[in-house]
Length: 252
Image (tube, rainbow, N blue to C red; front, side):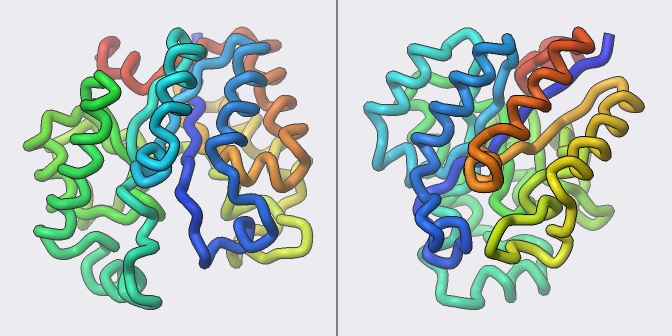
């Protein structure tokens, strides 16, 4: 049976985000809509959340975890999506060190802060996705120190290590590939929703397991979750097994 892992990234307000500038910035509210839709199709969801967003909406996230406890896991997506950086700081780090959280002390501080918050929600740390997939071997060593099991970043040869399970998205991510009305979010964002669905359906059918990255804000922005629902319908129609990333650890 083919296995499908649905993941999404949830961010705090980012002044540099074109979607946020178009007033699509209520990402936690979009997550709730996303989860309601997933529940309709019996789909499990792994959400990587900026912990500044959780800190600002702590009681709301407690209620989200209570309501969707059987189909949701929440892991972290860095502390604040780099909004505390000066304009080009993260870009410079990524170009020089393949990691926007370079050097070591910045990474350690970010990972420790996010781990402390997740512990307040009584969740055992298992997985992380770095904002913009930007991480290196140092990231993995620190995550290993804090007993993480999985990293879900896109990995290159100079970042990959055997410290953690590498479980990156292996199906075309939505945000940087789907054409957004009125804005250009990425140089590769040229696919219509129909073209995108055709491509990812083909990839899912070829894979034994598929890790999808379907952003709540992107799916809300492009067509108010119409594409997301059609993807969920495809998964249910084909009887694919929907899993959380922590299930991967149990099975391997």
